[in-house]
Length: 280
Ligand code: C2E
Ligand code: CA
Ligand code: CA
Ligand code: CA
Image 1 (tube, rainbow, N blue to C red):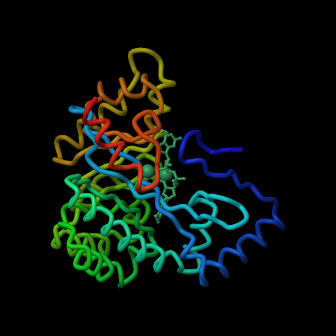
Image 2 (cartoon, helix red, strand yellow):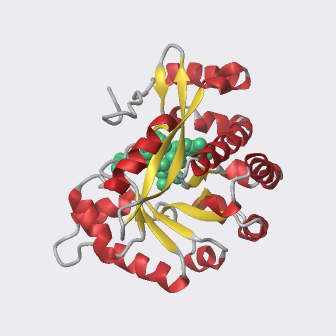
């Protein structure tokens, strides 16, 4: 079975318990070895809602497993997070994606690059250095890099999170809060952090869709108004249908991402995709 249709076909993977234990062991062992060479990055367009242009892309990791095919991040990142392998994986991703963005910029396609950073890496000492090295080696302008952090990874230790974010911001790197609406962090605490972007989880879009007429999108609209007031940009995630697109436009979101606007795709396909959208 395929998780999604189109180019980004990743295999569903739902093992039983014994299978699961074996899988964890396999992931832990293989990711320590040569499996890091089997990781591939797909890029999903992030679209401006005012002009329809592609402003940037989000890097999403997959594992091209020799026997099982293209595996989604959920099937191996939680193990990698536990074993700590997620740190070298993200270090590699930062290098790979900043290099890719610099390459596209040199071809006349400046795209902002968003990279997911796990809680484990965010609380580690090496993140700041890893980001600095990737920027230096790629030559990518720092404001073209966006680090995506979840609500929960900043809520764990808000004081340390603030320090860490302040250092990253001092390089000129942008920070986005990912999956907003899935955690229960304090809004006051969240918005006191130096963040530039809020990514609204698709569960909120689905909730808005189910809401009765008249209330449709009220929560979405309220969140977007709040971000406006605070000078934070908003991204709607999971825009799958024209109805979703209408709702997020109406709510006033700045940017959107979703299958309707562009699937995650291999790097080679990005330049053609971006140009075809610009031409449309
Ligand atoms: P995320 O950061 O929220 O990424 C968005 C996920 O939603 C992606 O799943 C993407 O393929 C999927 N998606 C995009 N458009 C739609 C849509 O219209 N509808 C629906 N239903 N889904 C859509 P993916 O690639 O399977 O990634 C899942 C999660 O794994 C990501 O969620 C992120 O938390 C994590 N992840 C992915 N790549 C990385 C990475 O490089 N590093 C880390 N630390 N985490 C990653
Ligand atoms: Ca993300
Ligand atoms: Ca998200
Ligand atoms: Ca998510």
